[in-house]
Image (cartoon, rainbow, N blue to C red; front, side, top):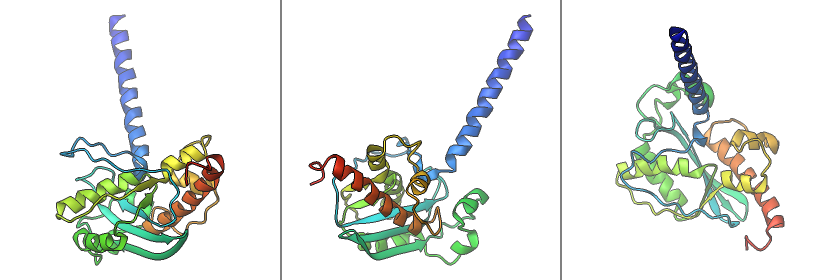
Length: 229
């Protein structure tokens, strides 16, 4: 009888471990929405997040090979300049990180190893990006994830960058639409019927983020008219 219960406990533990690993694999398919742990960082970073409406800002988005800073890399980056609510300029580049793209990332983004072969490296792109965005506020979906990757490379190449005001459409959408199933960008795109040329591509996702930003403030400005002035 004791052996029977021992075997039963072992089987339950094996099933639990398999379930946990399967869940982890599913979550990694949505790499831009998973918070990055700070365990490997030497110091904490503070981010100046605001919920106030901004007329002039940049929207930023990246695609990566995974969600672990230092192990995974940026393979595409895009920024959109928005003045008075209208797109006036764009910046986009693929980035050669020096390694083959995994099949899962290739399937999700459509970015292949061949596409990155002649792309510039991150140390060439970052100075151009920083010059482009200047000290404008930055908007993004789960923007802290993107910035932690960007800041990691900024520090690696000893570039100068002062953190600007940030707006996260992930948190704005939770506040504006509290009853949605979840707040992944894909869910919001579907909910608002936003037309997107290519999902999991930096420029297309940045444009979708702008639409989400506008939708959120259409609601928030009516609900809290004095909070965003």
